[in-house]
Image (cartoon, each protein chain N blue to C red):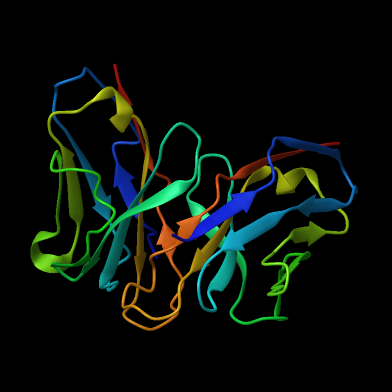
Length: 114
Length: 115
């Protein structure tokens, strides 16, 4: 069974540009989460999808970040325009629709904004 | 708000040494507590968890006990191996709410084990 897959693994862009990160969850997992780790600090929650609906987006830092999950399968996280402080590792995780179901994480996308 | 504090790293040990990585938390109510591990080039994996006070989570020789009185969840292993080299993250999940995968993480501790 394939795990959670994230594309690209690395992205280097200039300040002001747009970047789109993609996450393919494990097939059949209704829950999809985005997290990010900035500057080697703690990993912070960004948002949670249940199928195609946003269940909780309280961690989204500002309106430069847009997350979508059309059709309830893969998800994209777009940063537009990117700022220097957006650099970090963006993780995606998925789980089945059960209470206390454990999370399966992707290996992350390393984003560098220069 | 909720927070998790881990001991500063990196931690460097020789093979077969005893490991302790300290973790303390601040949260209201009775959160669930977790240790996740990230091996080089991979995603985070759940290592162990505990859902109530005095519970002990264990896996792969690692153990952690949920201590309500000291708000701690320290990770221990009696004899580490080179293959244990990784980044370890302590995390909590609040009780209630509907986002069961919404975790609060610590900053991570890098562990390097030498032969």
